[in-house]
Image (cartoon, rainbow, N blue to C red; front, side, top):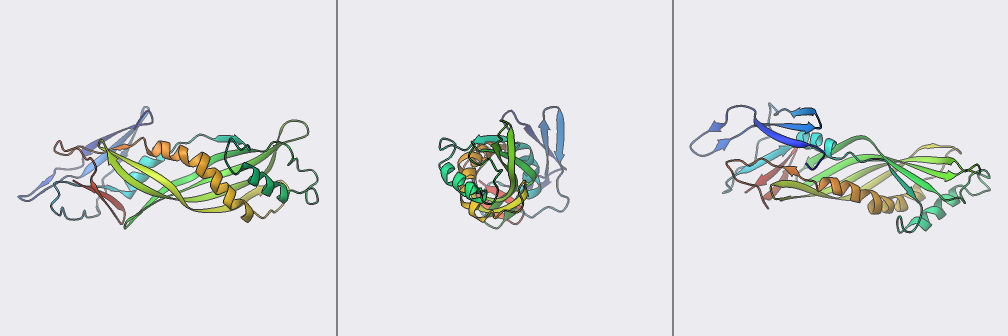
Length: 252
């Protein structure tokens, strides 16, 4: 998986062989630098759909994908200056923040100085597989800072954005790749140096900021690709993809 990690598949037990089909159950082993993480086979597996004239039906469970994406989605802290070159809604976002900290409400707030934003991925990243739906849930903390009169950073407030990303799955060259779009965003005030503030007016512009600056970082890592096993020397390319409860299934 690029320079992030590698993945290996091992048989969990002897395959079940009948006159009509073979059944393979596999462990997945992730190597991250010099560390090995084993994703054990679920002893109560989710049943795969019938082959329906396909040669192979391959399933990855939600638990497996959560461990893999936990490794892939290691995104460093982002620091951004509010300019139109950073994102298209910078002027509007500055205007909303300036209104929140108008001098009548907060005479000491240095909102006329260049504003800076720090975006940090926090908490657990979790993928949810439901019939015909793949949702990735994650959270980021967004710190808004200004330059104080002494020239140092001055924290204004911290937000938490809880995101639900809709994922589109595809397989190319035996690798599973995802592309994400923001389907919902909840914005919560974590802390403020100047008391409670109303954040509802920020939602539209924070969402646009994340779409233009942070979502490309997520998609870049999702496009690294998760290698799939080549069963019986058959490579999985452009399969029929089916999403069932707790599992993504590839049929070729």
